[in-house]
Image 1 (cartoon, helix red, strand yellow):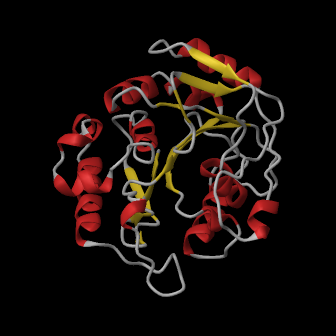
Image 2 (cartoon, one colour; image 1 turned 90 degrees about the horizontal axis):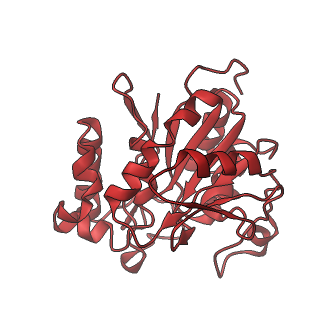
Length: 266
């Protein structure tokens, strides 16, 4: 990992896909490893994961967050995997101060779900960097999440790496695994269409349209049957400055109805 810290930290959106990426050596987990080595070392990480939805907005505020195995029917070795990164109660309190769009509750029960630790265990396997999760208010529209995320901007100047973790296209009800490998690249026509539309809007900085995702047509509606995996992307793009470009990686479909498309900003 690069030791010189920038004045402004980059922002990431990571398509996290299957929890098995935490223990499998594949093209996606390899890229996460490369990313962790190429980025400057953050003071702490703030992650917005698709897998923590609440009524209202919360931040994990415990000193030692637990590893949450929030999935079923996977091999025993995945349940044995832990990620004992420290928490950062002071960062959680700071989030509650700088966010004015909502009252931020300080949570001491949740921990780190697989949307966070499956990725971070490959990026930063030493689990030495403090991690805080910010929840998704399930009662609010995309425009609310986008506006709230903008208030996190000062953290980028303070050595904080902000990560949105979800999947731009995520429809588990229509998944089809080709052969024995879940990660074999394969996408339905509507999934590819939606993914290309999202990328075009991202490149052209049409953030308002992306926040109003329900108006983007039938392919987008199939891609986002529920919004929890899409919303973390809005947190990332809300933090894009005028002088910052977007750079895509892991841009592949899997299981027909998911895309692993990820990007860096800054």
